Image (tube, rainbow, N blue to C red):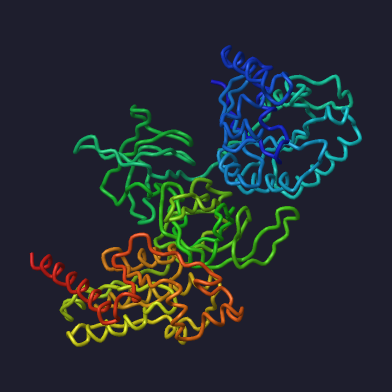
Amino acid sequence: MKPLLRFMTCGSVDDGKSTLIGHMLYAAKLIYADQEKALELDSKVGSRGGKIDYSLLLDGLTAEREQGITIDVAYRYFTSDHRSFIAADTPGHEEYTRNMAVGASHSDLAVLLVDASKGVQSQTKRHLRICSLMGIKHIAAAVNKMDLLAYDKEQWCVIESELNHMAKEFELKTFQVIPVSAAEGDNILDWSKNMPWYSGPALLPYLEQVEIDTEEFEQPFYMPVQRVSRPNQHYRGYQGQIEGGMLRVGDTIYSLPSREKAIVKSLKSAGRETTELKNGMAASIELDRNVDVSRGCVLTTDKLLPVTSKLKVDIIWMDEKPLIPGRNYMMKIGTQQAPASVVKIYHQTDINSGELQPAVEGRKNEVITCDIALSSSVAADRFSLRKEVGSFILIDRLSGMTAGAGVVQEPKTSSADITWHETSVTHEHRAALKGQNPAVIWLTGLSGSGKSSVANRLEEMLHAAGRHSMLLDGDNVRHGLNRDLHFTEADRAENIRRIAETAKLMCDAGLITIVSFISPFREDREQARAIIGESRFREVYISTPLHICEQRDPKGLYVKARQGEIEAFTGVTSPYEAPESPDLTIDTSSMTIQDAAELIYTDIDQIQRSEGKANDK
């Protein structure tokens, strides 16, 4: 079986990445006859005046062909006489850095292209840094378009020197600089006579012979569990791919994060029983006793593999919306998933110089070092030690899109020592004592919409009915609990997070809690819902139009905002994101405060009655 090399091409826009791989496939006869014929026909109407446009083999999207750039990651599978390859052609435009990072995360080697006529660009440095961050230790720098420089040796030497200087910053295992012309085929398959001053290997022969360290060093076995197989009542197998070490029948194994211990009873791979399995193999593991194992757990022979709910990480931020402390995401690490939020940003890394610069938030395409807190403990380790439980993505909980990708610098294992203390008196006991079902009534809307007035009247009605309640008003909370927070986007997110945690505790105390906050961002309100719990959260949108709120202006804030005295004022200089599907919508421009409060009270009363009947059953 031929050895496999997974490599990617990267570099700045129009450096010739697609052309390079396309020419390699075409010249080496590694494409089918119909692909070759289609390429020749498409090239006649292409951008090279009838000459073969090798990039068309990889640029499959219509937009890519029209613009002459790569947007998505294009994968090609091919085999030469000496090796099998999976090539990922990644985009060079800064806008598509996230796509490039995806390609890097699945590659062993990177072919870093540099346009010889332009020299080393900022995007070249960015891609080299991302490759290093994603664990790529082998780089082949292809200095392309040497034909445009008439194959000049002196200019090549300048670029080679700069690239070698850059490479010293990173802990690379191999770094080879090769002068090429992707369009003309120089140094692609064979040594080029046009550059007699170059004595090194051509690109394809180099890729065929470069030795990739698979890092099969001695390390304890570990495997993220992908699924639990239960074909019958006599067999329960925990399945996944072994990511490190070796496992044998009879070995002692631990399930993380619970750290329950068991003995390996049997092993299967590809449906066949065996006595041992090693790194890279698919496995189905049967244990001698039932333990708490499901998808997302990690099986290991190393009882010291860290389990933690706090990580220090490096993140490549990919979202248009900035990364700010307090905002909630879903983290996927290995097969594990858990809600997560950034609690501290240390710095961002300058792409060009590598210098660490102060930062209070992360913006698109920046590399940010920060601490992340998770809602539950996960098995995680430094990326340099265990790649599969040391790399992760952050997912936007509203859109489901990947917001960032990163690697673990350090698991902060001390956080595992902090455990939730289960009290004898539960929240059900407290609710029963008060004779009510606790809930959070979350009023959101513009300043001047009537939130505080409605909330105050609602609490009066609850009190008169003998209900136990508490009102949390935005201004009141900022006088005490949140007086250290300002009105930046990060502080607003933290403001909502703290009040949601407080409201949750009040729910646990059995109270009906009324929250009156502008809470302008949909994402922050959804985070509050996740913290409090779907069944106990009611979102009430006070939808009074902006012009009515501004006419009222009870605190004179709109006037100050229009005069520029208040920065980032919601509705004037900062956006308000209306709820998409609130539980109730109330417009106080067409409804009295009393009527609005009665509408919410009726909703609460219906919840109490329906849940009371359910409890009786």
